[in-house]
Length: 157
Image (tube, one colour):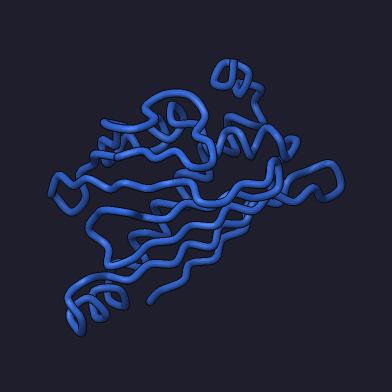
């Protein structure tokens, strides 16, 4: 099992960051490199507790589907999603939002395990952890840019 911990400081209110982080539409913008798109479940707008989304994306040249459900939510401080179907053996993602001096500290705790036993553990260590960390950093940079620019009003309506 691998854990990725990221902190991102955003000069915007926690509610804005919280909503952008659960926006299906912004997620698709932030993952354009992997051609990620929502194909089932919640496919537009803001995902809520108990809802699921199935993402179709291309990773490592292979088209894959990943279905996650929102298992916990306490607006605007926290939500978490868990994989219910996909390429990982397991995946759980915590999203924390803390108001600090008028800014938001956004914390991601992304926990995953690759399948295939020993081979999966080696893949996690050799390349998968770095790949997923870069993926999350790029996504957080989009959230930060949209939140700080005021473009969040277009995304959230």
